Structure formats: C-alpha cells, structure tokens
Length: 126
Image (cartoon, rainbow, N blue to C red; front, side, top):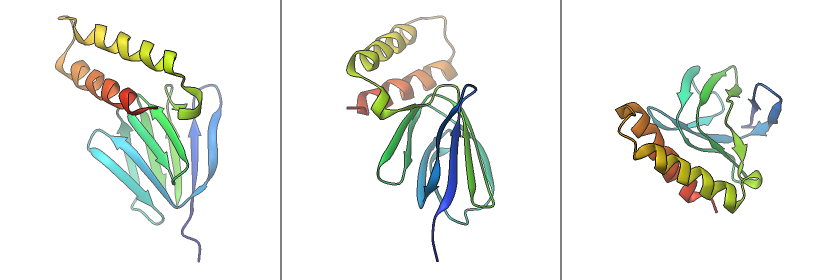
C-alpha cells in the first residue's frame, strides 16, 4: 500500500507544484511540522523557511497558509519560490533588504522575529 499523499502549492497567479509525496516538512510558527500520510487534519500559517517535499524538492517561503485533510496538502502563498529559481544575486539582495529593515527602529518585535527567520533561511540556500 502506498504511503503517498497529494500536495499542491498555489500562488494567486498559478499552480507552482502538484504531485504526490511521502513526506513534507513545513516551517510553521509553532515549529517545524512534518506531514505524512494519514496525518490529523491541520490548518496553520507558514513563517519564513524551507518547505521540503520528499528528498528532491525545496522551496523558500516567507508566508502562507497550509491545510491538510483527507491526505491532501494545500499550500497557499504569495512568496513561495523553488530553490532552482533563486540565484545568488537575488538571494544576497533579499538578505541585504531584510538586514536593512531589521536595523530600523520603526519595526515591531513580530517583524523582527519574522525578518530574523527570513535572513537565517536565505543564508541556507546555496
């Protein structure tokens, strides 16, 4: 019997990914969440981090929502990008912008928390 479940990643413009997998790791505000087949129903929010689909697919995400039920995982995000689509210049520009925003005295603790996760995650992308 297959241990796979369906996953779909959607942005407002298009479908980014659709397929089947045995495992997905998500960066949630509550911590890293691993989804396997027959996981309990779940609705949660994503923080900046890496979405890992199986061993082969990785996506950088800044925000979004996740719903899992009946072995269907749906990720909705306006900021999700495949690692394959992020080049070094783009990554460095995103890090510099986040660091600039982080140095501002005008941002809340929540924004600092999110920016720190963003910077940490971007530095992990090769």
